[in-house]
Image (cartoon, rainbow, N blue to C red; front, side, top):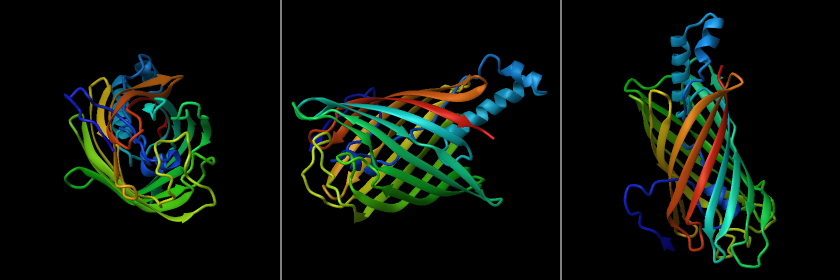
Length: 314
């Protein structure tokens, strides 16, 4: 096991590392819920509002509400984040792995009091071989889908919560898949006040069936070569602060415990995000860094993340 000690509060940052590339996404299905955050209104926002019969103050309030929703994973907001991850220092060859997570978030209204929030993570992977002279692999990873049932209104004390299930689909290209079907519970709780958002998300995935392939790959992280089923717990405490100009600074960890191999993966993430308008449409840009405080031998040491989120407010 590779254990790293973080020295100083400056070692902040974001992502995840299990034994197989396909299981990487299965064991960390929230590869970026990563505090969606947000930004400064476009200079033309006041003009647009006035021309539509509104006011600059109305537009600013709308921007503030959008920024707030972006930090809430169970907000009633359609969004399509495209999360680009680069992980470095994998294996003896110090290989790089690139993962683009396409993860649409779609809410459904269930009557007057409840929402059903769906988030589907579709990973597209390019992985250099961690062994010198090995062959790089590319393709689709396993799809992970989370479904949360959440009240439309916070509790009397201001807490927002959601609970439901997480599903793993063995959709990955051979060599990039865990070759397991999986499912389990998921829940989250958060609070928003005075510009701060803080809370935690948790889930657990058990595999309940296996497809015909084998999950090991020379393009993945270190593996013991076994076909042990997936039993993984994911923990994501998070905190962020948004300024009055809607610039948001976030910090979280996306920790995964792999019960099948008794192994922690603990990437620490720091990010800064800004919401802008392109062609009159809101788009969020986020840049982050990650440091692996702990992970399997041969796993990545550090990484970077760049996310573009397309927003479709009602």
